[in-house]
Image 1 (cartoon, rainbow, N blue to C red):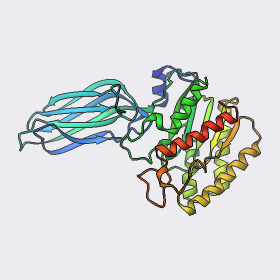
Image 2: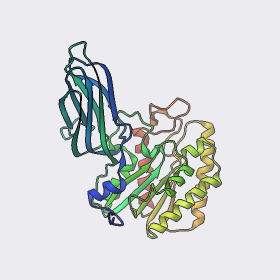
Image 3: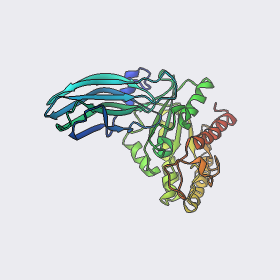
Image 4: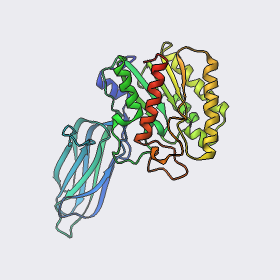
Length: 346
C-alpha cells in the first residue's frame, strides 16, 4: 500500500488521493454511419474549475463496414492560443475493441466529443467510446505548501451554471479566493470537494465517509453548505450541529488551521430567503459563541441584491433563483477577500 504523505505535493500523489473517477463519460451511437465527419455525442460532465486526467480511451465498433472514429478532449478556450485542442485519437475501426492509453492532463473544464465518418449512406453500426480517468480540482498551484480545502454544495461545485463553458476557472469565487491567498504569500493549493443538491447533513455524512480526508491536512478550511438546508426547511439546531462537527474534525486535522464558515449566499425566493436568514443568524451566533480565534463566520447574505436577476445563473427558474453567475461569484469573492483582509487572515 502506498505510504501517502500528510499533504501531497507530488502530482501523482494528488491524483491518487483526490482524483474521482469520471462520471457519465460514455458516448454511444447506433444507426446509419455518417458519410462525412459528424458529431454523435458530447459530454461536459467534468465541470467548472475541474481538470481531467485521462488514462485511456476505449473504442468499440460493431458494424458492417470500417468506421472512422475521432475522439476529442478539448480544453476550454478563452479566445487565446494556449488552450490545448486535445485530439486524442482518430482511428478506423471494424468490428473490434481498441484501448488507447493516453495519460494526459486536460485543464479547466474540458469537453468530450466523438465524431464518426466513413459511411456509404446505408451501412449501420454501433459505436461505444469510453473515456477513463480521474477528475480533480484544476488548481493554479499544485506544488503549494498549504492546502486550501473548500467543501460545499452546488454554490461551491458550480453545478448550477449552464454546463457549457460560460465561466473560466479564474472567474469562479473558489479559485479567485485561492489566487488571492497566493497573492498574499500563503502559497496555497485549492481542493474543492463539493456536490450539488446537498444539505449540511449530507455534507456531514460525506465527511464521516472520508470524502474530505483525501486531500490531507489543510491550512485553510472553507465550509459552504446551507442553501439546500434553507430550501428544505432544515432547523437551525441541525445546521449548527453539522457545522460544529466539521469544525471539530478540521481542528483535529490541524489545530492551527484557519476555518471559515461561509454564510448562505443571496436567495431570490422569499420563503427560502426567510429560512436562510434564520440559518445565517444561527451560524453567526454559534461561531461567535465558540470564542475560537482561528474559526470565523463570513456573512454572504448581502453579497449582491437578491432581487436582481443579473447576478444569477440563467439555468435557474425565475422566482427561485439561487445559483450565482459570473457577476454573482465576483460579488461573493469581493466579500470574502475583504473579509480575509479585515480579519488579518490574508
